[in-house]
Length: 167
Image (cartoon, rainbow, N blue to C red; front, side, top):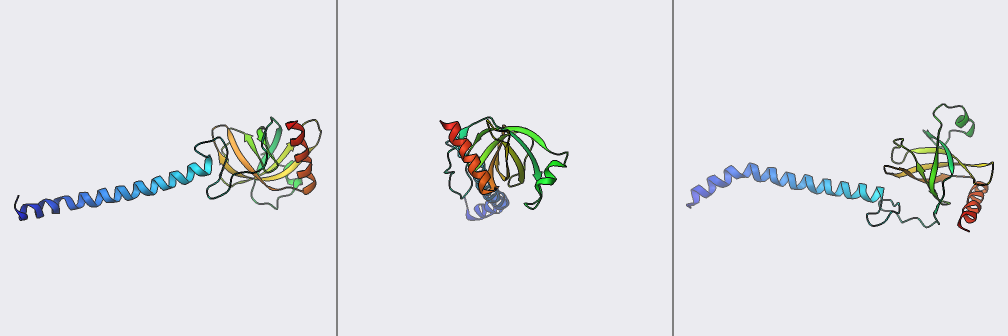
């Protein structure tokens, strides 16, 4: 093939090559985005929740079906009294719990990193633990929540209940 024909053919292919290069670049970005989402949702090799660029949980997580009342809040300054005067309070239960977080069984769509105010009802007790939690991941069953605000006394009560469950 003479050089002039090669040049003409390259000129005709150049827009297609540029489009192909753009597709490869877009696919690479999409692959990175999906990898970040996968690690934010769940570890691909286990059923353990984990966060992108964060360490795995270190607290003992126990299977426990515990009643939970919850509502979405806009900020950490919403008071306990506000919890009782809203019609958007929902009721569900946990699948598992630790002193650092809880898996909340729910069909509600909870936004990643949104804040929830929880009342976690302790087994064998009429009392509940009031806690602020952040949505760390979701799946078709519910959401993995990380506790972000709890009084020390309530944390100790929760830890005591977890110890009783594991016996």
